[in-house]
Amino acid sequence: MNHLLNYALAGVAALVLSTAYLLDAPSELQAAIDTAAAAQDARQAVLTEARFAKAAQSACGENAGWQVRADGAVQCFTHRGHKTIVAKVTP
Image (cartoon, rainbow, N blue to C red; front, side):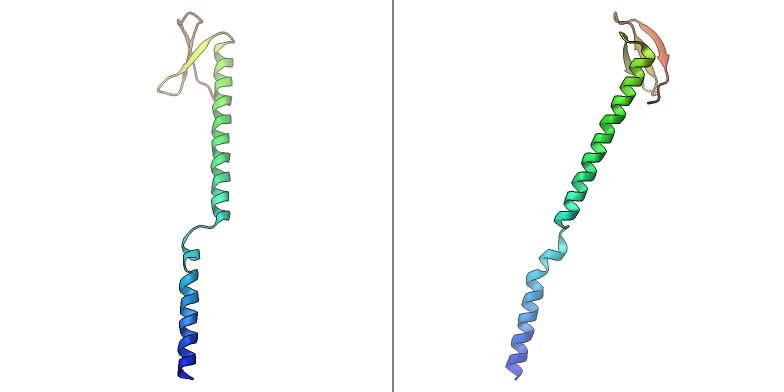
């Protein structure tokens, strides 16, 4: 009887140790959720940048160039490169 109990306990210990690796790592579902969130964040960043570029181009004019200054304002240029106006743009 004592041998049977030892074998049962050894079997349970082996089962617990063999499945322990499943508890440590994040699941495939969590990895898919994180990937989808990262893709959504990247898409949102691209859309925000596009809205800002459209607003800056609208503020400077159709044929004008523009550049973002260090203070966040937009410096507009003529098509020949001369500075014209400084505009504060919000998308």
